[in-house]
Amino acid sequence: MERHELLLRLERGLGESLSSQGVFQASTVSDLLNLTPGIEKERNIRVLDLAEGEVPPHPAHATNLIEALLYQAENQPTRKTLHFIEEGDTVCQWAYSDLLAAAQKAAAGLAGLGVKRGDRVGVMLPSGPDYVAAFYGILWLGAVPVPLYPPFRLDQLEDYVQRQAAILKLAGVEILISFDRAKPVMPLLKLHSPGLKKIV
Image (cartoon, rainbow, N blue to C red; front, top):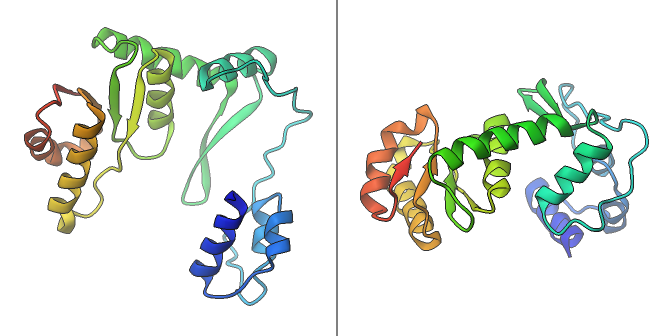
């Protein structure tokens, strides 16, 4: 089902038909790019080969992401698992041990704010190390991360605030993790989200 959805989205986005067999057989982004012969490839597109040696068996016993992270951090602590890329350049890489340390640090900070198991915590951060650390830190505590898109277009602010406030209200979010660029939106968001008690 996921591959079928991918095929439909690619065809819609590219405006041309692709080989369904090719999409289903593709195992890398490079394979998918090769399916689009009518589109000239940009020179700045790089496909990173991120494989590092043999992969240990999957943690079949893991019932959640934290258990899987603990398994990977124990069995391959130095293996790079996250590559943060901005404008085509790798700005930082995290091994499983880095991800574990970031999750534990974020969890300690959130616990200090009173976050506990079962709480719903909003995460309004751009994609990157801070987002990942917050997401895993919330999971570490047994709380529930509620991802929210950061504000990007001020000309659509009213619609943005209404949509995000509805998500906060529906999820029962009391604490929201945000960033400096979103500060101008926070008073409006708080006004429309009466259950929101704390923004950090």
